[in-house]
Length: 160
Image (cartoon, rainbow, N blue to C red):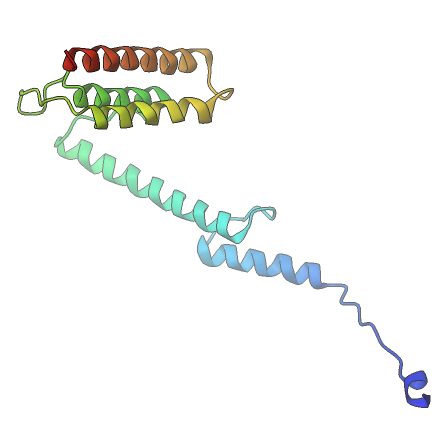
């Protein structure tokens, strides 16, 4: 009993642990992206993803300049929500047999593939609800309506 009474527990408080953590975060960010000041609230994963996005953007800009200088291709349209919707809608229309392919021939309808693209647009509508401008929302809902009606009409026609 005497041993346990004389045994004291000492608690050591390390006051500068926060400083060490912040320093380590800064050092990690500099290893990922030298020369940029990291946001102290960003996680190492977010910082790594941002570094990858920055490198991707820089490389893409460089490649676009080289293509433009060589004249090998027309510039691509800017990335936008409207472009995404129309790209998916075009794929659906092609799958429905409404558009010719690169060879000028119209392929037979593939309703399963068309339905897949329509379902992708539906998912996009559900996931972006409340986050779109009025024009974006109208474009998406009108596109879905037209594609669904076309799908139903073609399915009915095929079943006759």
